[in-house]
Length: 143
Image (cartoon, rainbow, N blue to C red; front, side):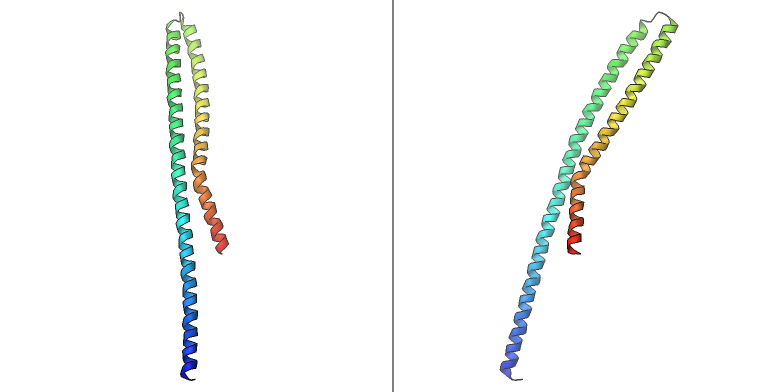
């Protein structure tokens, strides 16, 4: 092999190496860009989830305050009614009616609040769940 042939082969090999290195760099840069976008999307999902949680907690708090105010007003009215009773029989009948009504209210409020908390939990998880689904899809595409 003469010098010219050797030089030509070396130039060709170096040229191929440069092309492959550039392709690898471009692919790495694209992957890094995708990773940055994916991470940004994850952060946005966490922020959205936090906003939903804060709003939901505020709404639940407002409902709890309203329920507490209503319970206090009901108790005040019941005490006034009990104070005006003339006989022990009427007192116990009235008290039994109050207990039944308050039990029903407590069950209804518990059910309502449980449903609201479950709904809120699902809403809070939705943005993050969407990101997990996207990650699973990306892994499937690369596999």
